[in-house]
Image (tube, rainbow over all chains, first blue to last red; front, side, top):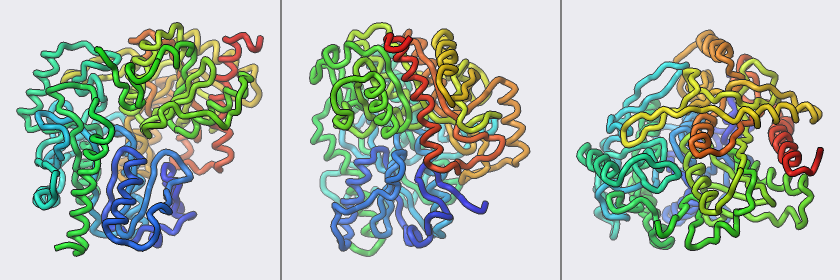
Length: 283
Length: 283
């Protein structure tokens, strides 16, 4: 191609010098909410003790409202919206962008929120395998009307390293377990409080018990396609999500706002610690 | 339930007087981009000749960045992000909100953008049937690990009425046709320019030809679940999307920004015309 327009980033190979803008990127952190990814960029700026005013940080995708992107030294922080289709558009354009920018040895983290399966709210889950609604470690991609199956294995070494670092940080209860990725927040996750619900509390709990037996520790909406695409494209990837509630105890997220905010910082703190270790800023 | 927290709207039955806030809503317009739905709210404010300054319009969901919501007289304008999971979360909470607010006889429109299948860029497609990647007019919802099939038929009368009104407006070429809803923008829509691509130009064109033969006139990423959920919940619904390119001619969206902006206003102008007719503001 003569020109590659990364439409949903509002960037392109003719209009932007991608190697100059992104050539030094070594870590990419992605999460659903634009505000949270802005906060993370400010937090990592502080943690890496970089010069400049964190209030001045600029959204590289400000010409579009599809995604937000911030660059802080070797770290990119990008929002991906909610659900598999939304994160997959972002990943296609991110992977092309890293290619055009000639980046090497990049590690990518999804830092998100999730529902816990048998864990106390606030627990951080590092994903072993991302599984679908049938507890299979695979992602089904429809290509030209045919179903293609892709593996959803994540990088084991990065996961173990994250687990080890979690013990060095105070107040971040952390486990490794399977993460179930659904395409719906209500019926798809067995919630009784959606606009539609055709099952009983007992049937819901039975499904969650089966998930738990299959090693599922949390439920979110992006991990399978994230794992599958990163794997095919040879990007080392990890999923680090905090649980906002224990789904055995309820469906609604009624935890006070400030407690939720502190929970959401836990994956950020853990990944920031990992990045500082890798950069040799702490031993 | 004693309390219903509409988590992704940052609204709830205990914290907000939903009947007072939303009881008079008669039309709901939804679209992917928050900025576009803010512009639409300002446009409809102008069109309905309502009092007050359009610059003062306030995002009802400002406490969260998951969705944006604006209310202008009897019209709600809400963003839903990209893809089926993202719009389905919004629809669950919207349908519960309309129920709590005791709204009656609401018509809901998705006004969006799409890729055209054999149509000139800028054509508006009113959806007859929303079909999946296999051209079937159905939506598959996974509930507790079981696949449930739902019909994706939309309201025929509203579609015909929209088509009729399109002829009363200048420069809005409009057709009725089937809309294909995919879960991926690149491989899922047969694009050759994604980070991953395992097929040839000829295979891509063959797939688009088959889609065209099945009555598909445009491709987007939300219509099947939108049609299915509205149907089950007895909400009259229509999908009105403009095409940004003709997919037989390419994959990249390289049309100048100002032309794209004018294209994006076409579904807005058509739906605004419909609303004015229904409110008796024009004859």
